[in-house]
Image (cartoon, rainbow, N blue to C red):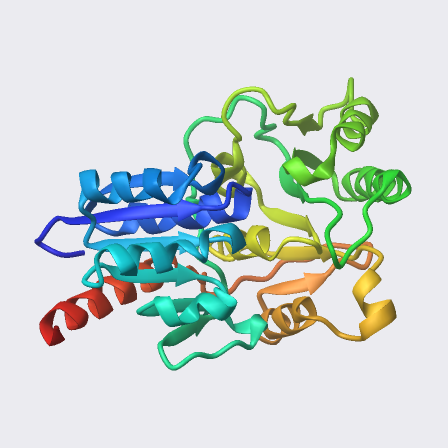
Length: 307
């Protein structure tokens, strides 16, 4: 993205969404880099030692626990360009550039937004031994409970029954992967439910075959709890069905940021709610990872030029 090799220090909070966001930006910025997790930074003196030894041009943070670290960075060296991915809240004054997702509806003087989130996903069409070449394939991405959605064993049982009926009716092979938030008991139930069938469930051993699922499946069904997973699927141009879950937030507070995100994607004909059937359509893929990365480099260049 630039002829000059930058030095970028990335800090994330440790959750999967923040890690993938960081890795996606890393891939798209031509830089020497170091990645830290906030749990591994025991005290500010240790963090300053890292800054001193690495001498970054750009500091990029994501996740609530990482937000305060820009204050340490700026106090140590105000010339380091600081970037936050998502909302740094009261620590926004220590950041030179802030990216936020559109659905959060958060604006600072130095912020910009995109509809989908930066990520580390890519489409891999290399040989994938588990697929049935004679059938169309439905990639199933299962998330878990969060502050908006309920996702217990009763929801898992209902989801498995729906998937079984859908696959039988449409002669589909299911390729299923779970996230860490799915929970061990739920994952075990899913694995046992589809045991001794032609369907395949990733058991969490070895690398997550997520990119192969993107490359080989004809349709996708994703639970409604993860904006990050849906953003990743948007790079395929293939049909995406969102599987509804019981919504805690709606019951008490009305519509949430999730609804805003889904409605925009529905308007763009990228996703549909899963109602019991599937159908075919296509759309121009959306991937904002490269755009966010390019924006960081451009704003850093302007920062250097003006200081």
